[in-house]
Amino acid sequence: MKTLQDLIKDLTDIIVEEQKINDYLENEPLDLKDADLSCAYLRWANLTDIKITKEQLDKLTVIEEKNNEYNRIN
Image (cartoon, rainbow, N blue to C red; front, side, top):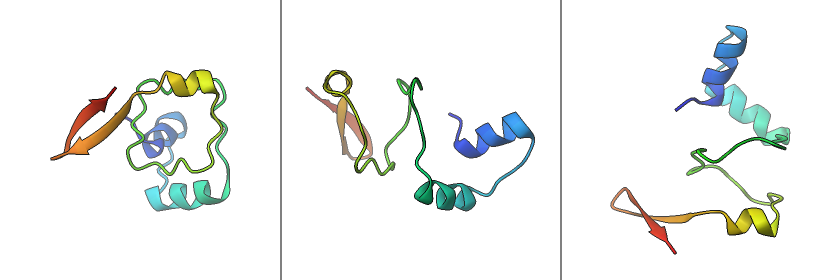
């Protein structure tokens, strides 16, 4: 699974420290319009105040953690 750090390196051959990326994203909103997040790993992402449609919300799979394993909640 690629990180934003990997993405930047792959596209630019520039290595950016993970903390610098985090600091930047704390102050700059990230436009993910038309991004395919179907396989995104968002476990530790702060999704406070995200904008999402009801249709998108209905397609989400909510999981809970138990002993470091994911269990789907239906």
